[in-house]
Image (cartoon, rainbow, N blue to C red; front, side, top):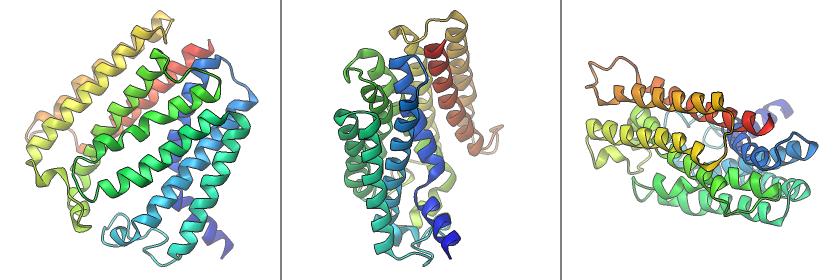
Length: 288
C-alpha cells in the first residue's frame, strides 16, 4: 500500500515535467554563478518539489475533467486510488516544503517568484483554460519564471536583460509546445468540455499557427547570442545550427496531413529536444 501511495504521489507531481522545470531554473543559476556548488543542488530540489506541488494541486483542481479524458482518467484522483482531499494535502505539503528549501538555498525574492509561478499556474492559467482556447498565451508566463528563480536565487538582478531574454525564450517555446499536444490529443481535450483552438480554427490553420510559433521559438533562440550569454564561437555556431534545423523541420506542419513526412509527435519531440539543447549550450558556456 505504501509503494502504491508513493507511486501515486510521483504521478501526482508529474516528475518528468518538474525535472525540466527545475533544470531551467538551474540554467538561470549557472548563468549567474558560472560554477557548480552545493547550493545549486538545493535550488534544484526546491524548484523541483515546488513544481511537483503545483502539478499536484492542478490535478486536484481538474480531477473531474481528468476523469473524462482517456490520457488522464487513470491519474490517482479520477481513478479513485487517492481522494481529492488527500491530493490537496499532498500538494500543499509539497508547495510548502519546496518553498522552504528554496528559501534555504536562495532568498526571499526567489521564493516569491516560485510562489508567483504557482499562483499563475493554478490560480490564473488553470481556470482560464476552461474559458478560452487562448489561455496558453498568458499561461506560458509560468514557463518564463524558473530561469528567473534560479538567477535571483544566486543573487542576480531580476531585470537583467540577459536573463529576461532567456525567460522570454522559455515563454515563447511554451506556446507551440501546448499546441503540438493539442494537434495530437485535441479530441481528448474536447471530451473534457474545455474550449480548444480547433473550435476556432481548422486543423490546417492550427498547424500553420503552430509553425509560426515554432519559428518564433527558433528565432528567439538565435537571439540569445546577442546578450553576451554565449562567449565560445563553437557554442554560438551550435546555437544557430540547432535553431535553423528547428526552423526547417517545422515546415512539415505546412504540408497537408496526407503528405507530411513526419508525425506531429515527432515535431513535439524536436521542440523539446531543441529547448534542452539550448539549456545545455547555455550551461556549458557558463561553466567553461
